[in-house]
Every structure is written in structure tokens, then in C-alpha cells.
Length: 247
Image (cartoon, rainbow, N blue to C red; front, side, top):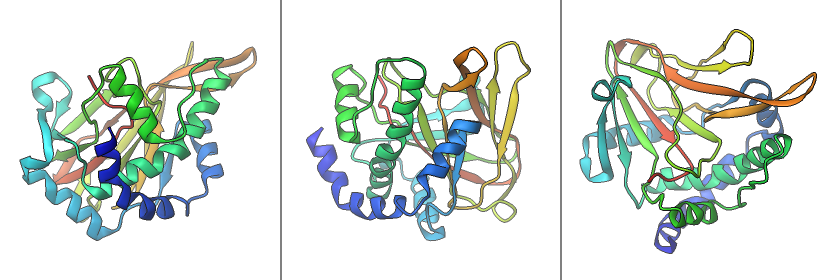
């Protein structure tokens, strides 16, 4: 664990400065109200191209998933291995404390006793002690006809309730279609759909599993699933940042 933390440390300071520029009170309000919030221009176009180019180099990854083989949709993705590339590790580490504050507020509203530590290294230590030792950041690739079925990224007993996806390709130039969608299943009501428009380098933070909602009789939870609509042309790359590790 210390080796992982040390490898990411030089990138953390720059990432923390970048993350601090966002209005986190407003972002928390968006996550509270809609289950998702956009972070415009989290990565530069050059950084997006650099990350997307990693896909062809298997040395960066621990596994390769072809979605159609598992009924996940069409398309493919690769899970990074440790140590993560500096940019990805730094962004993951810097985002976590901001999102942990929101996650802890959600648990408090839901009456749950679990609280997430303030630093990502401490949370990863908890994951590893629970046998969840495999890194979960992933790089996804879609070509025409590909899509990602609605799903939840839960990999073990310990799951951080918010994750982040960063669009690495430019809509209209690199691909068409391929919209990010989030559905919310509300008790005794029709499901609600949120489509998040993203440009290259934009990120969306969203609920992994559920979120609290204030009702007339108190707070209740609604379940969420996310996916990607059919890509109609070109190639679409996305970086997924999940904060818990997997079994």
C-alpha cells in the first residue's frame, strides 16, 4: 500500500490544485438533486489524447473485457494495474476527499453508521484488508454500434458510493452518438433518466448504487444505473475512475 501511495504522490499536488478550482458546494448540490454533476475541462485535450493512446499498450493493464461475451453490451475496456499512470492516480487521489465529504453526508442522512476516511490511501487500505486488492480505474473503447448496458460498478463488500467518468474523445469530431445516461429507479414511480452532455476532457461524477432523497415521510434511497447509448460513428474513449478496489 505504501508503495502505491508513494508512486502517486508527485502527481497528487498538481491534481489537488486542479480539483480545488471547482465549486464543490454547487457540485454537491447537483449530486444531491440529480445523482450526478459535471466537472468541465477536468483534463486538457493533450492529456485526453495521451490517456486514450494507452489503450493499445497492454503493459498498463491487468485485464481486458469484451462486453458482448458477458452481456454487458458491445464494446470493450481494460482495467489498469498498479502503479497507475501518474495523471490517473493523482486525479483519483485528489477527487476522493471531496467526494468522501458528500458520501459521508449521504450516509448520515440515510442513518448508516459507515463513514469513509478523509484520505484515499486509508480507504484503499480498508479495501485491501477486506481482500479487495485489484485496481478498478478503467479505459473504455467504443466503435460504431457499441453501447454499454445500464449497470452498477460494485466489486465487493466495500463500495464507495460515487464514481467519475471522463470523456477523452470529442463529440461530433471523433464520434457521434454515445451519450452518457443515468437512470433513477424511484419507489412506486416511473424511472427518471438523466442524459449528461460532455465535451472532450469533461468529467461526470455520479452515484454508483443509490442516493438519499428527502420524502414527505423522511429520507429514502433511490437506486441508480448508468450506461452509454449506441455509438453511431467514429471511436469513443472514456476513462472511468472507481474509488474502491475489487476482489
